Length: 259
DNA sequence: ATGGTCGGATGCCGA
Image 1 (cartoon, chains in turn purple, blue):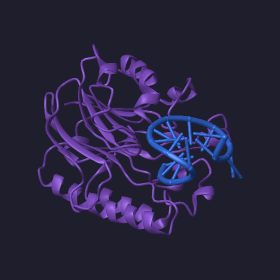
Image 2 (cartoon, rainbow, N blue to C red):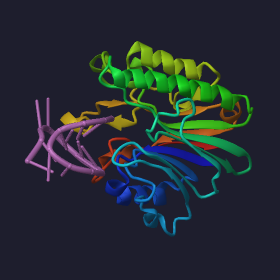
Image 3 (cartoon, chains in turn green, purple):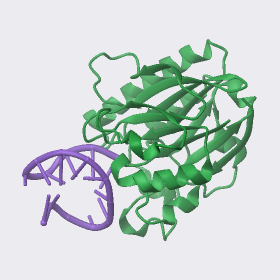
């Protein structure tokens, strides 16, 4: 079972590039972030003939997540529990069944800039809610994959220029600590488990020639419960996508599970 | 047209 995450930065702007990538990469399941569309306006027709079931959790203009699967989506749940007043579309769950049932959580974690400030407070509060949900999911003792744009640079080696991120919400010590608290429940960072070299990135800013200079950061992650980690057979980052016409500023990151 | 660069939605905001 091939499972991918891809922050597409707008479904309408990325329709062609996304479909091209789906045809080439042939993932079984995909978590999309920043669809920037309401559920009603989501262009389901662009996926016709590809065989994907689609579940969206969108909002107007900003954020928005979706799950695509060609092996079905069951028990879909929208929204991160823990705050009824939170109206930002950043979390969607579903179960996929291959050889094994796998619980998937597609997430778009708040950026949090500028820090300090209310946006950073929201990020940290959201991460604490995520930690509680992550702990709850572990108690199922089933394979769980939490994947998406975490907006977290876990360590200095995950940035080409770590010094330029020192005061940024993506790399502040409090942000990294909150991410580690989730990992330390018993989750595995799939990419780091398999790709130990420095210079592994998933995002290059549109500005200042970040891509041609390879000034990247690693912020798109797949966290695996112990039962999912036992099934991990491969990981990859489709970096080449970033050099095409009309790219997202993120690239797809994927895993292969024996499930 | 909107700072740099994009996307989405307007009369800039978020990233």
